Image (tube, rainbow, N blue to C red):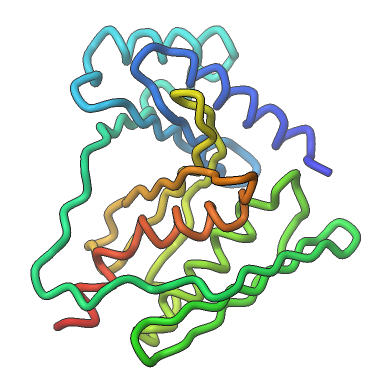
Length: 212
């Protein structure tokens, strides 16, 4: 079951998403505190009035300390790089609950190479963090460099009458910059959408690394 802190974080993310032009928000945690707020807006929507509306929500919710740690991202179409070796394909996604823990196993294939990620963590409604982190483990196995992809946040949002999973990753292949992945939830398959979003966040860097 989600903790009280997780409930408060989710509530803050929900409030931030009510701002016009915002399609998603992820509150990053650095226990025991909230450390940063990442907000994703539609192309052309990032302006001073949008930031002011977001800062007002932070202030009214008692999170004034996060106002100078509010980062806006403008969503844009992904470009496919030249020399791209392709994208990993998902062969299986398994998530089992054991008491208060969720255990995930994710299998990917890229060309003739297979990889597997295994992970576990606190059980929540969909155990998004466990699934996303396990997907990143499976992805970085292709380049045999553990720690290349670090999960920063994951969120399930509703936008344009669709449910969408957003995954935020810090990638060493991108010079430590943050990268964002997104995937629509089809037929209620939240776990599969989470894996796709995690891969979407790192596919470009992964492809470049494998083609170099």
